[in-house]
Amino acid sequence: MILEKADIESALISNSITQKMYINGEWVLSESNQIREIINPANGEVIGTVTEGSAEDAKKAIEAARKAFYENGWMNSKARHRAELLLQISNKLEERKEEFAYLDTLNNGKTLRESLGDVEDAVNQLRYYAGLATKPHGQTYDVPDDIQAMVVREPIGVVGLIVPWNYPLVMANQKIAAALAAGCTVVVKPAQQTPLSVIRLFEIIDEVGFPPGVVNLVLGPGSKVGAELVSNPDVDKISFTGGTDTGIRLMKSAADTVKKISLELGGKSPNIVFADADFEAAVDYALYAIFANQGQVCSAGSRLLLEESLYETFVPELVKRAKMIKVGPGWVEGIEMGPLVSEDHMNTVLDYIEIGKNEGATLLCGGNRIVEGDFAKGYFVEPTIFGDTTPNMRIVQEEIFGPVLAIQTFKTEEEAIALANGTAFGLAGAVFSTDGAKAHRVIRQLRAGITWINTYHPTFNEAPWGGYKQSGIGRDLGTYGFEEYLETKQINVSLKVEPSGFFQGYKE
Image (cartoon, rainbow, N blue to C red; front, side, top):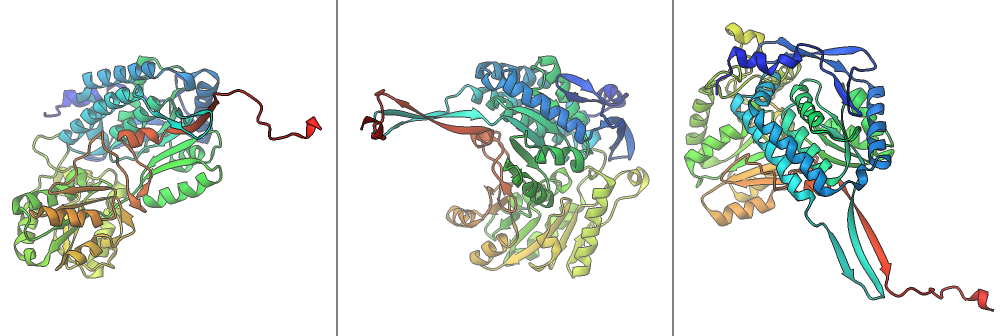
């Protein structure tokens, strides 16, 4: 699919005026009367303006969500009704999938084929959780008494959903779908840089007709809107996807109200390639693992761990192909890698490249901002690969979140496992080998929540997503993601109604 000028204009038609927030069933401007310009990272041009929310706006949304849940009956809503609403959203989203894909490509920078995949995932997420909403979840127990003991699952209540900029639509959608299926009310805060597709999703939510206050959207900075969601005692849970440093601050703040949290944080994921791997598949996936979505993926295979005997044949081929990746605006046909999301983030990535050089790593390819012709207006960085790295280097230990790959080498399985587990993160990892027993042996030793054998990056709505160590707490997606929004209540029913007989003094 090629994005023509008419398509761009159509996708942005409702962005010609300042986009509003959605609170208590109404589209509203911020209390602050401030606005934010939204930038196309491929050319630096303004593609829209949005109202800039404040802590006061967040408070209003929280109040509306709490009233909808506790006073207006959403906590007792029927699962079938919630499922029907989610299915309506999915159908409307599917009808407009090209429009949503265009928006994410223009706002985030990713290629149009990636954006289309995101929209398709979002449609299926809504349908998956619509189905899950009506499925039985609870237990009964045979206890040693005349008691019928049971467990029921109930919605947590008001949930704050804080969404990152690398997958604007699909990550907002997966949290919204699971929380609403569970019976919660929500306040959504998208990333400041990439709110457009989420605003458009709320247009569909408004059309579908949720009761006022059930679903709310507050735009604005994390320092104000996000901080209010985390600290406000009327919010029962926070689901956050973003950087580890922010997650640590959030966790500390949430502790003040003993708020339930789920955190999907950063990663520095190892992609382990043994000498017996299928060469073509391993090279192909090594590129895909790090350069998909410009490397702006929490689970990116940003560390390539190569068996030493493979290095001399593998690396030259990898570098050759990396240099041939077609970089450009994501809406142009044939483009394989787009710009980074913002100028600030581009500069952060470029700083890390300089750090790698200064640490003594060998720059094998890339390492520069692309500035020829129209590229100078955008935030493009060449696919970059470093060799001769050591485990203590910052480019090996820290999440760069860009198209930068660090290569490490190993001689034995044990060394590969030690290197793979040798960071503070534990989000993802992969093993490439034609020896099935070895691949399973190694994958079982990786301290990571999402792993692959002889592939990289496939993600499924049915399976849980989350990490070990400083990569987070809790899970998104699947039944595990659904359960993140449920409380567990024990109910005991006496089958023999009579006094306990514990206190007898009154009989004397």
